[in-house]
Amino acid sequence: MESLHYFCRRQWRKAVRRWMGLTYAETLGVNVFYPSGQALKRALSPEFRLVRRIGIGLTVPPSYMTGLSPASLEMRDRFDECFAHWPVLRSMADHQLFVFVRK
Image 1 (cartoon, one colour):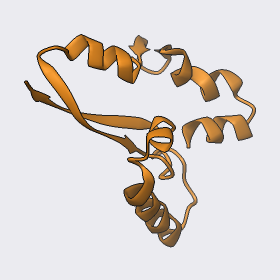
Image 2 (cartoon, rainbow, N blue to C red):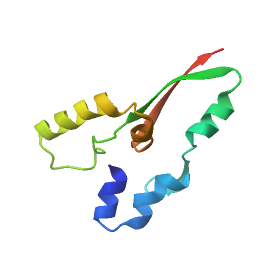
Image 3 (cartoon, rainbow, N blue to C red):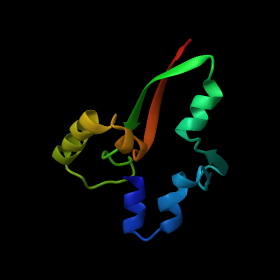
Image 4 (cartoon, rainbow, N blue to C red):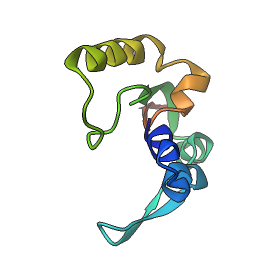
């Protein structure tokens, strides 16, 4: 949703910032690193095993996006609950939740 939001406003750099793996958070003045799922799995193996991966914010917009009706947000939330665990879709979400267990 964030990328789509910024693409529609022709803010190209912001639209793709998470895709590059590293960005600069202007308001905080810090670099932010977005590791890939594979990099995270490698960093935690062999001590941990990935058991679940879920997208967070696939269709629910970031908090700074305003003007959506409560009914629209509820519908988007239901969509996320149904589809945010699908492999391709979870990768498109704003964030991802990785659940690991110790081996």
